[in-house]
Amino acid sequence: MKPPIFITIMSTVILGTMIVLTSSHWLTTWIGFEMNMLAIIPILMKKSNPRATEASTKYLLTQATASMLLMMGITINLLHSGQWMMPKDLNPMASAMITIAMAMKLGLAPFHFWVPEVTQGIPMSSGLILLTWQKIAPLSVLYQISPTINPNLLLPMAITSVLVGGWGGLNQTQLRKIMAYSSIAHMGWMTVITLYNPTMMLLNLTIYIIMTLTTFMLFMYNSATTTLSLSQTWNKAPLTASLILTLMLSLGGLPPLSGFIPKWMIIQELTKNEMIIMPTLLAVTALLNLYFYMRLTYTTTLTMFPSTSNMKMKWQFDNTKKMVLLPPLIVTSTMLIPLTPLLSILD
Image (tube, rainbow, N blue to C red; front, side, top):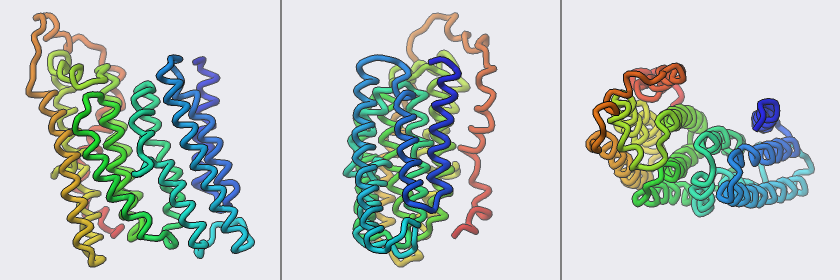
């Protein structure tokens, strides 16, 4: 893809998301989603092959269905209230339709089937955009309509997403599918807390984007797409292998790493709202995610495949200039836990 075309398309993707974030009018919000969806398709198809075409088609059909449901919810609300603005008192039927549409766009269970397939069929850089930037706009809509969301609709989807995200990643060897199931589980955590403390969802989203961005950049730097290729990282780049180890543990939510902060604060907030079963289920199902993260750390650090003597020294001569952004990202994705008292003001 030529640079001017790529810049134009990326600008449209960013503009579409910005329109959704800043709009208080339902029609412009829908237009922002459409701009974003139509512009992301060429990015998903950067490598022209049948698999990328199939993945882009699946993404287009799913997002178009979600946009249709969104417009139906907007129309129902218009007929009920007579206005296009985003009110605090959404019609219950309209709120349910919009919630389902956002769940489809986020990939929440039971609408999660497209996420692993699409992520696996596109390049690693496109998967990074799909699993980070594309989550911002739907979550912003859920943030705005959170007072009117029916808990009986959203909470089962959120808990099922955490379960599916952990269960689905257990038997995977493709790194992009593992990150896709990880994304489904993290979306479940975010949507659970949206009903009780929407600001905490923004904190969770920020930390998730930082951790996922760093992980994808390390995968791309090492040209790793499967657990087998990841297992050879220790021979080629020992420092990178240790960083991947730390990042996997942070994504799993182990203290004292950054990924522990949102899970800790979400469980605390749910407990304050006199909910005991919900955080218990979330914590137990999060162990499934932790299992396949630990499996990746085992593959990365505790296996050393046969190699030539020159290969073991190759990492000392690699050009590290393209890793300029990684040090600050690695620090923020692993060492934010001392800032927890400062972040707790969101509670």
